[in-house]
Length: 556
Image (cartoon, rainbow, N blue to C red; front, side):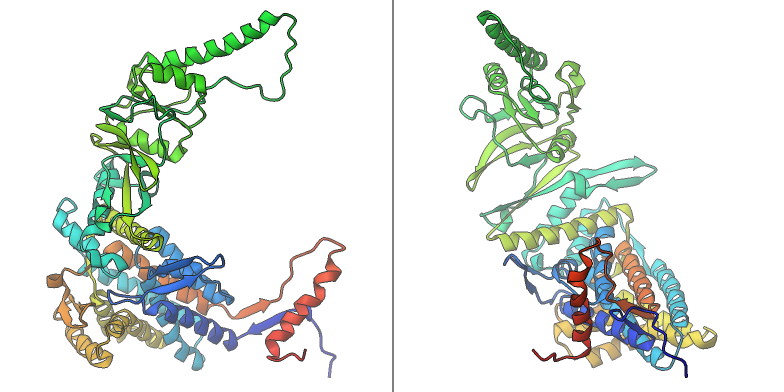
């Protein structure tokens, strides 16, 4: 017998083979179970306490998982899924996780029977292609201009969220915001940049019903000299600057030796004249409002207010871009290069209002604004945060529809249709891949099943009758009405989903399931290379951790 050869350091822990597959599947299922109850209109909320003691109350899958701190590597990659989904399409974060968890769950049986993971993955990918083909088939196009359809669509997409109890409010806000910032790129393609040009301002106080989309922008600033400058200007001429209106200071310490006393006053006079010059260049254009991203000295403030011009200083760059988009101004870097067309004349009203105990500047009633602010009011901070998350989702949905105006039925009907068609196709799949393919088909039923569970209806009966309906292929639009748990036609109930969201969810879920199945080795306990000299102190620590996982109780 040969002496055993040590390849890995003894501090490393290596798991391989089936053990890893089971661990990964368990971990993913655990993650899916955490947010399973947040799917559908009858969803529960989760309350999360973070380290600082703040609370997050939400049922947005991504927001929940973002707050969780997980130890298991496979579970971490499940969280990435919902983040991808959130960044790509903004909705369907919960469905992705539930689907991926289910895909892995059905794969467990095959691993028991010693199927090779690549076989399962191949079958899954085949199922994915066919599923997307089915989606193509049952999708229907929608007219983006028709507001009622859009409203119904966005409403059903955020019907699962907390704010659905406020009726059309959030849906209205979302559609207003996205139609405002939509830009025609040409060839009938619309580009909607929510992140850059839609700002959500949360102001605690007031009622949710007071929320609105402004035809323009607002920001948390007051004019520089509140007593002297006008706080309400109708049809203002706006100049946006990106340079300081103050005397240029020396880069580093500048020493000037003055021989005569008059030189000092000459120096001061030069500074004053420099600033006066700057202001005169600006005032040539007869603006009513000057906004700069940098500082504005007292003297400049004096010249401007003497000319009856309001000024706002130290504005965020992003806000400045939004103002430029809203009123049609151009942000100018040097006052001496100002031209007439740089002045923004598109705004109807500038005014400073006091909301709560802060001053907000509004630039509203713009003609054809390309940027807007959504003003959210509400009772408490937690409520506002939740409303903002829902609004983000709603806006993403509206954006997806504007970009790709196709719909699929909601309420689990899509998944059931896909499932039924894949089951029929599975009989024509040759070889050993047939079984995993069929299992993938069954896994799609996780979504309607979870919907039924969350409504509290008899799951088995509901699922059986739904399966029956879809197996005959009579009506692809039959699904579960998430509020009552009744089986209904989604066309009549106006429960829709965006095609983009569904496709993205299917792709992400199946690809992630395949990736996790392919892992067959986990080596943990790898230490970072340390600086020489620091090595000795932390070595024992790693070993303790390794042992702590093997033996549950370590004697004190």
